[in-house]
Length: 136
Image (cartoon, one colour):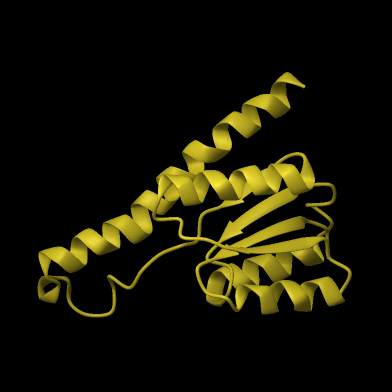
């Protein structure tokens, strides 16, 4: 396997299972240091498995539907690794689980909060860190 991510720090949201977990596994295999984020506590199991393979990895539980949650995660990644090179926004909901016309307005609003705002908050929170890196 290539080592595209050697000396790179990657933050992966929604990394306790599914696509996020697999991205973490593949990035680790290519040399990335990882900060794994999920609201579910089994994100710690994913990190432990990777750590057992010699990966530099930290797991953090957080609610990324809030600005405070996203900001704290990026600050933690910076504290632990001194930089963030790559952000993978993988948090999302289940708007696809039934025909769209069967969703209530409240369910649609919740999906927007879970899928769109988590991405926007995380992108906004990482920008000052990336700006600092360029200035250094």
